[in-house]
Length: 251
Image 1: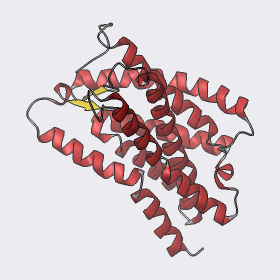
Image 2: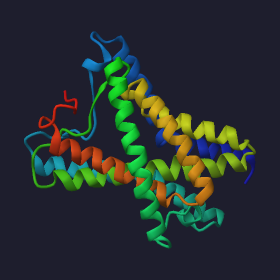
Image 3: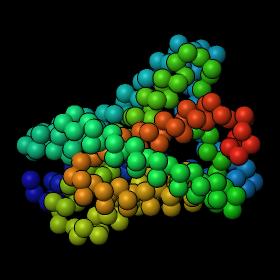
């Protein structure tokens, strides 16, 4: 494909997924900055109820949101398959090396998760971050399964698109490795800006680490595993511990 076609394709994929999320996060952050009260007194809410007091309708909305968020990943798989690289297998997202992906993902999650929590608490204390509320779903039977599914969806979308796909396309367009690394990490940080400056910087740092490890391993599988584990612990941990421990901020 020509460079013009590759650029157009990349922009369209981002406009349908994380690029749009980055613009939304910027607008949200500007709204938080211009609102009355400090950032720490405001809340960034994830996994919220779509139909309070109507649990079956709420479940339908939750599953619909998770499924539609994965459509850009299906589009990327189609584009890569058409290119002749085996779809997502060409990015190292398959079942060929489950032990490798899970073991390295678990170690990476432990390292990144602990540092991320410390950075979030520090940024919140300094007034640079909103209070992140990972979930506010009703206490019904599907609460934990939906939180786990949401965590996996986040991991698949972000790692496939912002690491595997974006690095491939920018490399094909002739950008230098350092420029590609910067673009991927800045994009990752930007769509977390709704959380505040801490969310921006922390995820940019995570983006640098993930890009370097992807180049070393040649697979997004471990990154998906790590990201999914981090979000599962964050979402379900908040659901189980909020209001029960003093160190966990709630709003």
